[in-house]
Image (cartoon, rainbow, N blue to C red; front, side):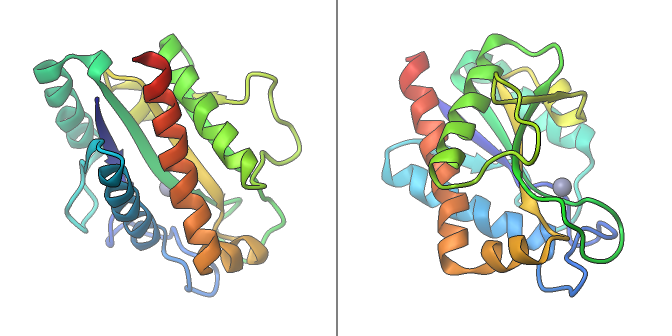
Length: 195
Ligand SMILES: [Zn+2]
């Protein structure tokens, strides 16, 4: 199984940071992705980031990179996780919170399983969906990256960059560890189940 990690956005993507500028989504997600990659290697799992650049690589290019690997090794031997931090609006601190995992509306069963594995690992660490959590424990949307990639794919929104408490948590050592660990554990559980 090859794990592909999309760390979303680039240094030149407008917005995408906490109101006080402490958390920049592109930078934070790269840090998390790099740590996930290292930790997966410890468990003997091959992974790599589809956007090693720090600039914003267009979604179409990112999907092409993923699908080239799918064509090479077979889609069922690949999985993709796109790591993000959510935002409720484009200005000021907000109250929205929560952890969510998103799959394409018409995705395959394996994407749903991967999302459920990730949610279970998040929930174990006290991170949950805000307000409404669907019984299936995943959310559906037509996000480009999950729609146009050929392998099981989940986009994770790891709390909110415009919630002050979330930002404090996300930037703390224990918060970073929780975000990294939930991805690693979710991915390992998924691999274990589909093997
Ligand atoms: Zn994002």
